[in-house]
Image 1 (cartoon, rainbow, N blue to C red):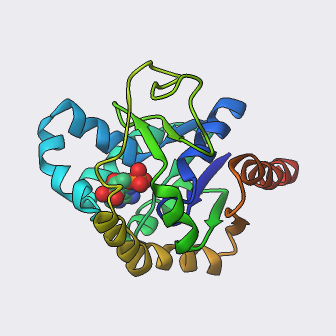
Image 2 (image 1 turned 30 degrees about the vertical axis):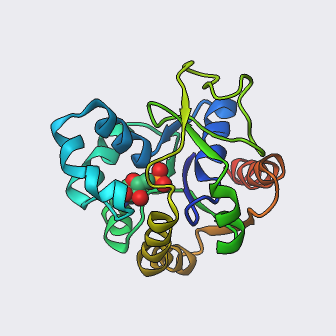
Amino acid sequence: MKLIIMGPPGSGKGTVSERLEKEYGWLHVSPGELLREEVVKGTRIGKEIKSYIESGKLVPDRFVVEMVKLEVKGKDNYILDGFPRSLDQAKSIEELKIDIVIYLDVSEEEVIKRFAGRRVCEQGTHGYHVQYLPPKKEGICDVDGSKLVQRKDDTPKVIKQRFKIFHEQTETVRKFYDKKKMAVKIDASKEPEKVYDLVKKVVKEMKKQG
Ligand code: AMP
């Protein structure tokens, strides 16, 4: 199964993708995570893209598109989390023959409430929420044992910018997939467990259809 998970910042894309990865063993590809890792490691690419991420802008396609294509090359089962985010990106992966696009629908007011409690491990890989998705040990990542921190782009000013980009660019991606009848909208305003159940229902239905 080839899946795209879309939605506004803070809609739970990463959480849903991580759970699908665990349950079905599908590869979870998150350009956001991969890019953050480059920044943390201080690589040449990391240095070039840091300012885009920290100001909430989209990283230029030359860093993102090939990176995603390389990750999924030759694979049949994967989740694209937060990609594509622009019409150009969507058009550039037409050849991948994506099966379904899941759109996590949640209001801006609701996600803004969630941001204060969002945490991520120091590598920028595993996401938590102090209230809705706490780690087993407070302040420590369950998976890699690193300290949990707030994302640099989770400040009110940057969140505003990320929403602006979302409305300007990412909404057109949804319309693109809507027209192709590939997008399924899910109510993502509920707690993580309920949202995941709804996603699973869609996935199971897709699997039945083969
Ligand atoms: P995310 O972890 O998905 O919220 O992404 C965090 C940041 O990484 C975004 O605000 C962008 O700066 C960058 N990013 C993630 N996905 C993409 C993408 N598909 N295209 C360009 N930039 C991206």
